[in-house]
Length: 379
Image (cartoon, rainbow, N blue to C red):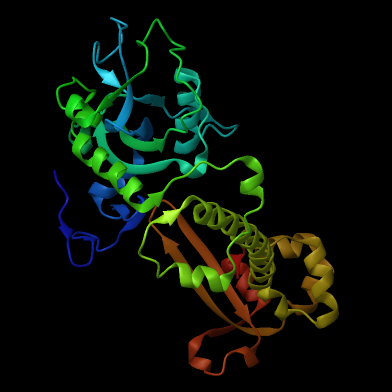
């Protein structure tokens, strides 16, 4: 069953909701894949186990032959795609935490690790470009053989990265029992080569993205001292740089990278502050029920109980403070959310002055509320 997508709103036609899970940037364009998870089809798709496979295509521009990519041939007779040509890459490792939940390593880490293991080349993450991704439901764990989502067990995602070779690290066939020596091939040669499927179907697109890389960047070799002497872009320089249309120089790229590091550090600092702010706010909103106590008793109750507690827990853990208010009259509302199997029951209690409109809530004493709603969470 194929899901229908509204091209104008990019929403699922059944549940009218969407959730983006992949957003990846080429050198000149940003691509986005949306994953729909609210209707029956989407919920089923969301329950599938996540498996990912990466391919890294390392490329260079030869002065005489043009753009070339680095490939090797799969020579292990018991492995899939025997005799086909491939780049570096493999599986994104899956780990299990203490609670039995699966955790995947990042795609970039997998790409760098597999490239190092297979060719001895050390990649720099900031130069690694993800240009293509496709997710298919599959019954096989590490094979993207499409099937009906109702019959699938896995979501297998295929990803292609490109990476510019630095002309320094020579590729080495470190897994000689699985693949041949690494060789360089032009587009005219590649179209006659038997590539693994994900590269075969995207070979034109791969070379187009590589062409954009060289059209956009004016590359030059810099030594370590020259790189250290380059200052990061300022905010004003960056705003001017955004309007630039001509080729970008290596020095400008390094200045942007240094500017990015500064921005990232500031983002991380602000993210830590935002986490603390949210903690304070959650603590405040989670304890608004304390307003039913006198000012002096609020701290005492807060020290004895946790957030999202019930009237029964207050009566058990703070009996003295509870006895003071059990005959007081308060306004209250009852909230019940969720499905029949998992219902979240909450009780909102406030003083009379907190409700400007008396019709908004019922009135009762704490003693009366405890009889009917003793195990409802207080909010």
